[in-house]
Amino acid sequence: MHIRTIATAAAILSFSTPLMAAEITVTFRNSGPGGTLAAENASCVAADGKAAAGSNRSPALSWTKGPARTRSYAIVMTDPDVPADLSLLNREGTEIDKDAPRMEFTHWILADIPASVTELAEGADGDGMPAGGLALEMTRHGRRGQNGFAAFLKDGPHGGYMGACPPWNDLRIHRYRVTAYALDTDRLTLPKAFTRADFLAAAKGHIVSSGAAELTYTINAKATK
Image 1 (cartoon, rainbow, N blue to C red):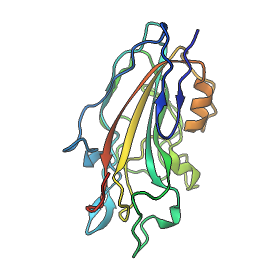
Image 2: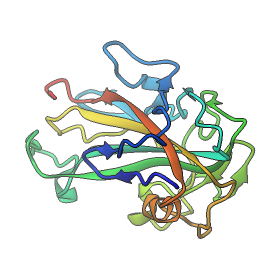
Image 3: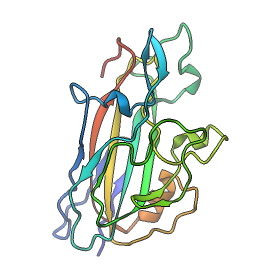
Image 4: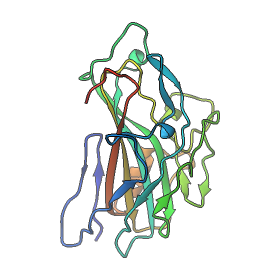
């Protein structure tokens, strides 16, 4: 019997039964002060009240092993605090209220991570900002899915990591959540250009454990949680 895990923009809910394995513990190996995402892992940094390009290196991560029936892992990094009205982003003379409606955005997704892999070095799946992102392919550390920019930009596959770049005019501090999933299959049935939604649909019934960790980030000195 498999345990079904349902992910939403607000939370990850687990149904406890005697078969449920202990939750996976996810660890950011490096972080900034006060539990913030390190600047080198962001795709933009503060500059004169606005933004400048950042290093965009995928963060160093580790996670504890899943239960004995684990045959692969997947990781997903999301920002649940993106303003729903995209026309407000970085608009001169406009501030985005911290209580404005929000939506979830995918910054990174890897599926079919070998069961022997429980950590990723910094920069393993992104270092810098190549035009259009990285290729959608199987690597030694997992199969790349599309990050959220694929839905807005048509200049490439948008695979691999795309780091934090919250709007410089947003009054809310953004959260960046990495969820690790342990699955009971080596390979999920996914399209080549798969999204987080595709992953969650394919993983249904295969997730045997999961866990998450998050850091915060902003480039607006006036932003609050």
